[in-house]
Length: 103
Image 1 (cartoon, rainbow, N blue to C red):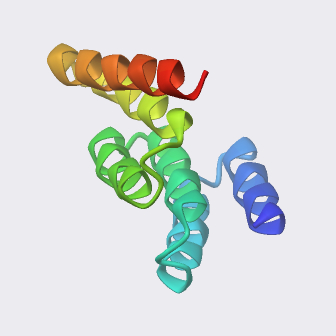
Image 2 (cartoon, one colour):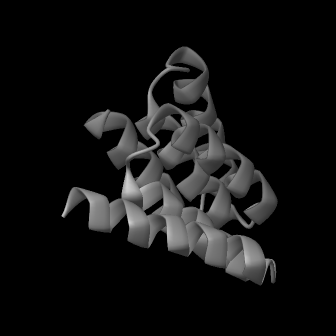
């Protein structure tokens, strides 16, 4: 996973946005039960400007890892980008509850 993450982030850094999304999507296709693959793909989609796709993708990560707070934070932030404040608040509230229960 670390090698793919480094490759995708390097592609994003040099502005090869479409290639980064393709590499991350292919990795996700080959690892459909790995929440981290969806998280990486969502990050690439967001940076490439595909906010709604990124929301859908990070939602898959949440379905696979419902106790991972980072995915709720990411989705909340993405909802704010598209002016979906109620959805962002719902994710932020869930994140706070999740953190409180794990604390």
